[in-house]
Length: 420
Image (cartoon, rainbow, N blue to C red):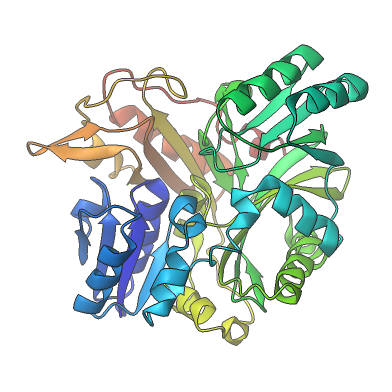
């Protein structure tokens, strides 16, 4: 089987890493890939833009690609699936209409209401003054969400009315035409990434991300500073509840609307005293959740993704998992999520992988034969163990082996898992 992975982050490295482990996969092309995928066996980076649909289509035909797996949300929201399907190429990833579940917060909110999914109370605004008046009435804490793709940074949890009103003004100034303002939900967050072929739903292991830049979950929101799986807050019985109350009704509502959704349905959920509320949906694999979840998956990844693309996921009554715990710690550039410098030399990855751990590349590139930083989130280091205590000890031993100028990471990834 020949596959093509679209994207260049840690998530795409993890997907490619998992795929090439299978004897059934003979070739994995990464468009454009990164410094990590460049070194994988059976893997080749192709220097094309993720938005070059014609180039990707040509590449698929030239290499007789059996399945395209789309990593990031941007090409999905621009219609890569529609384009490739029209060329008779199989794709894992929703079409352009389905991708609105992430690309438009207001569209997703209307879908949640139609599906009867438990979610936060909120309103959609196209006028800054009306939004600010609403916030003054509701009070704080309150949540402001940009209606559009914002690379994981379009959600502001405001602790004061003034902060929320400033966020409204800033997001409209940035060019967003719509905003969603929602009640602040209390509880513990959990990410559930589910695979679907548009009919059947199969959730992956629940994960818990650490979004804030600072230890103790303080400071600015980021794309994710670390994650662990399976999250103890969502045991198997609770996962069944999530499938029945959130995932299945959403897929059925998408179908009712005539949307053929084949890909990842990623639910960001808030859990409080045994009750669940849906915070948001994403239309793709999470990053860094994928880096913690895939090392525990025993069912061949290419088989389930192809089954989704061919609408026969029901052939997999369940997925097989290792009885282990997994922790991923993100190493970031100094200054992230604000401004940061690139092209800092990276050393120690080979030593880290002897720990044992797996190092997934996010913002890296090869420059004159040397691996250098090329993004805010640079690497994701993942370790698995019999318990979370084991996995956390392993992962931090590996993290210490890696070095680059300005390396920053949180030292408390997994702190909630230990409490449970």
